[in-house]
Amino acid sequence: MEFRQHLTVVLRINGLDRQMRVDARTTLLDLLREHLALTGTKKGCNFGECGACTVHLNGRRVNSCLVLAASADGAEVTTIEGLAAAGKLHPVQQAFIDHDAFQCGFCTPGQVMSTVALIREGHTRSEAEIREWMSGNLCRCSSYPQIVAAVEAAIRVKEG
Amino acid sequence: MDSFAYGRASGIEDALAEGSGPNTVFLAGGTELLNWLRLGIAKPERVIDLTQLTGLAEIARLPGGGLRIGALARLNDVALNDDVARGYPVLSQAILKSASAQLRNLATIGGNPFQKTRCGYFRAEEALPCNKRNPGSGCSALNGINDRHAIFGWNESCVATQPSDPATALVALDAIFVTVHREGERRIEATDFHILPGDTPHIENALRHGELIVGIELPAAAPHSAYLKLRERESYEYAVVSAAVALDLEGERISRARIALGSVALKPWRLTEAEHSLVGVSANDNAAIRKIIEGSFGEAKALTHSAYKITLAKNAAVRAVRLAARASP
Image: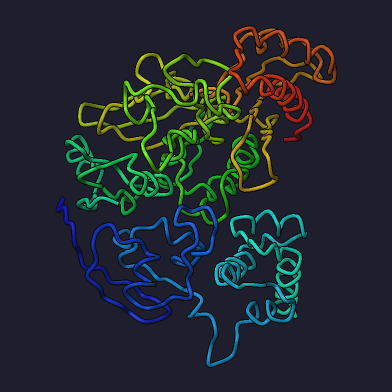
């Protein structure tokens, strides 16, 4: 096994292959923000406690502050910048706007990424289930009722 | 975060050969390790990434009953697996009450029992007296803020608790941790994995340096089982106390009971005395169950601010017995 303090990683981010040289300590979050200027993914607590850094790693939502870039070598990553297709907002983004599901907006990229995954997972059978499976995304403005309304609206769009 | 060198294990042999080296740690889900690195709780020179190892994330039925769960299975995948959810509701519930959806997509079942205490003195960003962090420096919690701390098994060297929900369920299920090491394999009973502080609270579990959990075996299914977690908010919060219960029932009578309390000691705490006394008792006889549970707290000992946890733990255990009895296979 080779041990390295610096290494080259290749990740497919929002559909594009990106090759980068990183310090072994670099988290996926810092790689996105500092190396690729994808600052839509937010750094809130940097301890896995707030969910602001939520992205999709190989299709699953994760806290990007708790993933080493080195560990994610070869992975597919989707960030908030990768959701809108051809200039049209993703239905979840539109639902958040329609339902005023934010005030300051800092947690919103994480909330939106979490919601997209939540709907795919199917943990949306009741308001209680939505709240439980969204609990990893804190909103300090406490827009929770509006966020739940946005999630429910986005489900309806998908079903309609 | 101090710098370290990163290596990727290509196979178990590779991981074990290098894992016994000095200042070397294993990385699986990373949900604890990355925070230890940030806080300086761990200062490794080498990190071995296990996540590329294949064949360690499967959940398979064992011949003759029981399940084997690969150590690298992610928590959500374990909790939502049909065999786990149907046969071992206590484990499924304990996992789904842990952390958040995102964290459970990263964290592994084999890594989870390694999580460290949530004691604020232990996790402080600036160094405070803590025998776990710096052996011999003292315990700040002993006479400090200790309302979330132990009620069983503590001593003056350390009054912290082990916070894992899944580990508490695994202890109630009499699970086995299957480990590998350069010097051979072992099978460790879940209840023997975490160790009480003694004079060496910095030693937290029974594993040798470089030893790896590769699988967790569950004995015969425990459909009458339940996990009750009491906490200060409804979701995404550590337990104040929790109770994992698995029952065998003959009609309404309890023929076997297993009870483990979480977040009350540095290891999940079995109420062995109550387990024996509950045999033959009706699962509907709340008064008898309560009397037996309360009688099994002889060893409980409060800290300056943790006495309320004794009452809470008794109530949690009684309620969890009732929940387990009502669980339908």
